[in-house]
Image 1 (cartoon, rainbow, N blue to C red):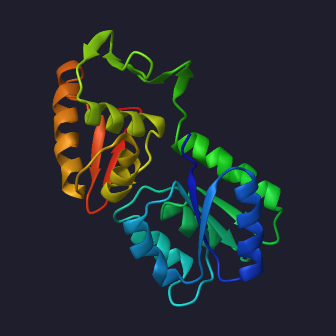
Image 2 (cartoon, rainbow, N blue to C red):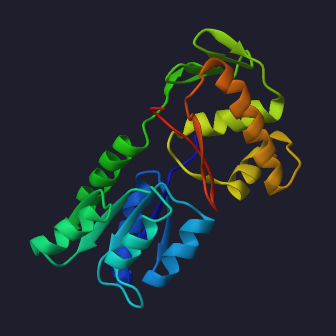
Length: 230
């Protein structure tokens, strides 16, 4: 199972380290940034599953970061603040923040909030033995077969592996580079643009069974995600 990646943006080192330690214990992969202006290029290159974003940051504050992220990303954001003014709360939520945590806070509460937001924004696929089931798509690793509404979907090995990665994390945005890295474990040899070709073929095959449904979305300048619900 691929660990979900949490990005902490916090300039108070002790707080960032405390949050990181608790999230790692909760089985997340964690990265930390200290400055607001580092967030946008980082997210474009390595989209996380969720961001813990402090409002008071050097170079670019959390409100501005949240506003810029909303222009190209749907990554869920939990804002961390020492301010309790209602204006800040409303402004953050209007800009797309999914939740708020006020300092001082319990690290266990933060982990609980992270899990709650991820449950809403990254629904877990139903696993039945060696099967991944998302909506009407069922992928069976054991039989190497994919069914959509009881109709068999014939895929190449690379298409099967790519669909498996996307089904394992619905609504998670994968960069082309990340998909390429993950597919190398399956003896996949190619470049980032080869992913585009596989996605194109996957979409055509899925569209036969699910016409007029955008099952796989392109996130411009970043990569792809499997939508659920579609």
